[in-house]
Image (cartoon, rainbow, N blue to C red):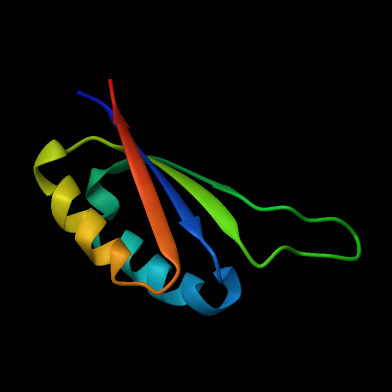
Length: 80
């Protein structure tokens, strides 16, 4: 089974270091990571959306719990 996590960081500049540490902990179960945020020459949005493709369903619930400890994180998942 493939699971996609959609994660929104509402304060990207402040929370990205903590987010990156958690993602690094679970690096072996993350097959794909895509980060999206609005940017142009004069503005860089302070929110971001990250899509993670997870290959190990056994650890998803703990990954979600760890991510939700970060202030301003919301997430949802889809399994195929």
